[in-house]
Length: 507
Ligand code: HEM
Image 1: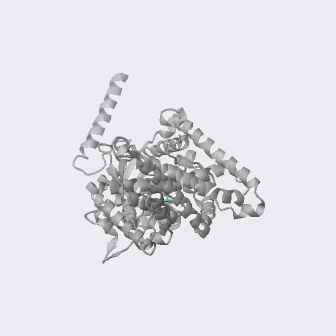
Image 2: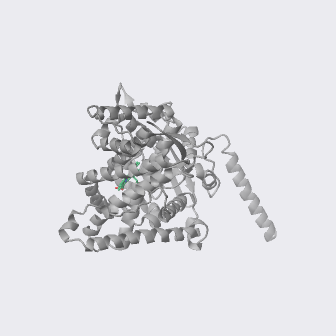
Image 3: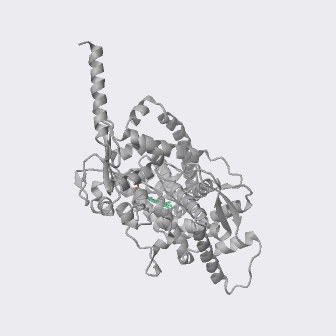
């Protein structure tokens, strides 16, 4: 038999094997796999809607834990709160970020807090914890958040055109994290919407790098410098230039300050610089970028989805407005002076918003919790597996595989949240006639849980509540019709094309 015939026979045998493999899957719910490449094709085809595709798989397979393979990789996905508790707390040591995650995110997050394990993570967590436990910082943050929410409200008020809110929120949170975290006045939240090359490049890096989880051939592409891997280098250069300019400015400012004044300087970057003067600029770059993703993307995306939710649920927007109106009336009860101009009104209202008074805005809090439940800023969370293990559900996980719990999918599981799981319903947070936000962090996983629970939760709520209160008190939002509101798949969730609204003023 000739070589040609042998090849033909081989191809035929392979095609039959593939066909039999697929035929045997007919009628079985969930992932469809191919020999050798596993779910690679299905993932590529569904990547643009990956969180919903995963949710659909959990539903049709009627399971809370499932596995999938790709060449050289195996994944276990879970939405089972008992498994989540095991991963994040009970057997925490067995589920670090892991080598694969580290390698994938290394170009963007380097060895920063989100991308490190063991001692390097512990040192950064400890250093950053001081920052978040400080009362002084809380007061400074409150003032900074109010100033920026006011800026935003003025932009919304002055606009005659539809507004893209996600861009505005991202600008606002970039300005606030740069000021609070690194002592820098950036000023990208301004009526003329100045160019923001850093943000564009940072988002591009985030999206390209996140795709590596779905692409078993990314290392090959990186080696050949082709496709997205090629443009990654260009975007990284913009990101690096930005961070190095922050470091230079901060070093110069610190040099000019007397030593005792340096110690009292509260921003996070200075704290890292003073902790160890030998920290390289590259390490400080990682600190900056990790806090940009933590402080900018998460809060801005939650505010964007919140805007989407209240614009598409006008009854909820009305309830939030009523709560804010009553709150205002109560606080102004013994004050006879009622401002009449818009500027005086927003200014007066903002002054009523304090850390303590915000606690009274329970419906607003419930609406934010509901937004975070349905659109968690980190929709899929990946962990490495150090040693073989059995999860509480009985599922086996193998050393070297990747284990992922999926907050986005968990929110849509009826056995966790009830038959209306997929609906936006702030009243969900009311039990036995009272608002109740105490919930297991292994069920409501938006902020993660266990030793690596989010450090910025309180700060994020402070900013989100101040901003949302100001916007909902003075404006009504309507979605621009016929826009496509899908997400862009990245480490953090965000709208692929932003969220466009028209606004009308509330008196
Ligand atoms: C709505 C807003 C926020 C949400 C939903 C959120 C959620 C999360 C999640 C899910 C994680 C775990 C990520 C992972 O390890 O894969 C995390 C970690 C973290 N978050 Fe947040 N976050 C928010 C805002 C913030 C803010 C404003 C800051 C600070 C400026 C912050 C600081 C951190 C830090 C430092 C960690 C790393 C903790 C560690 O690994 O030890 N977060 N956050």
